[in-house]
Length: 241
Ligand code: SF4
Ligand code: SF4
Ligand code: SF4
Image (cartoon, rainbow, N blue to C red):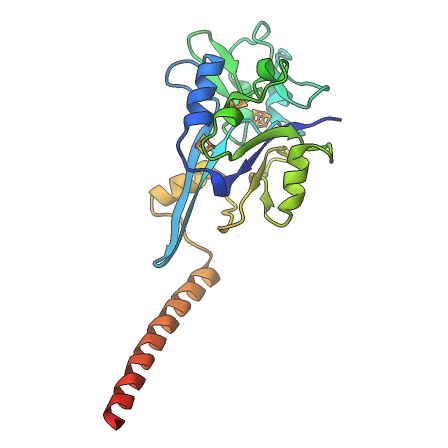
């Protein structure tokens, strides 16, 4: 079965929101103040000078086992067998928002004016014309890719294969099996749901894994000790001369 999904090169994302939010909203006429994707700030974390931060654009993860589909009482929310994408039949949607509550990744977007659910379809209307999704086409960092992750010959599969060992999915405690993939090579992946991480960081509740923090502090002290030792040696050499 085909499984179309978003592959995000997080190292390339510059946090501009130009493609994943502005272009998406324009293309899909998303309601004012709403968005089909969210940009998370993963950091800063660490101890100076070893700080890190990356951006994470998150839209629907086109789950293999989508909890949004499971809970929809009318069948409006369904997984398409042709491309594996999750769609909302707005004629069947009664606006109960069960799918929104059931999504562990906060990926659904309720249209308050129309009282129906709205979500990322990978811009199906553009793909039907052989075009790329609006976010992919307009991403300033060229960080976004959309394609069939089950086809080994697809561009996204080749990209994932080329980055083996640096590919992640969102933390999946519910067994949704998200299809979205994130490539992060230059920094350390934070294995928390991004909104939980942002909240913890904002409230001062995020703690780096202890061993890593201790290691960084130790390294920092070691660097300083080496600088002092070098200076002392230079002074001694100067005295001898
Ligand atoms: S448009 Fe691209 S570079 Fe800009 S925030 Fe979105 S994913 Fe990142
Ligand atoms: S990310 Fe959320 S809205 Fe998208 S398929 Fe998975 S459960 Fe459904
Ligand atoms: S694929 Fe289309 S609907 Fe989905 S986030 Fe990108 S622009 Fe928006």
